[in-house]
Length: 128
Image (cartoon, rainbow, N blue to C red):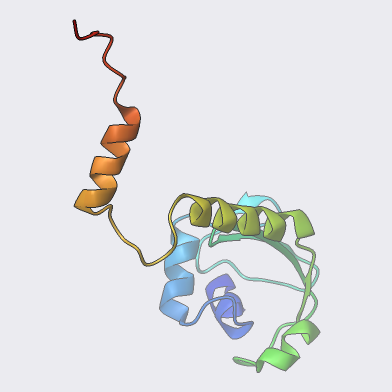
């Protein structure tokens, strides 16, 4: 089975077109080599996949006939992704939320003035 079809059928990508595009961009490696979308996948192949800033790793156990349900995905692949990859993603989310809460958008005029007031150096002039 082609690598793009395998990634689509094991639900790593929502559509086969998205899977093909990701493989063309070089986000997928098979046994340490960058793969093309038409590259065949066989049992016991090791696949490395970069998606959403997470480096997934998996071993192919079997080849599905077509797209499988989410509960049956583990029959066809063994996920060997280290937990640190997911923890790093959580830390990135927390770091972004610390700066500005999601959905607040760009700074308002009031926010901008507060920032400018904070960054202004106090005047060294003394009134006589």
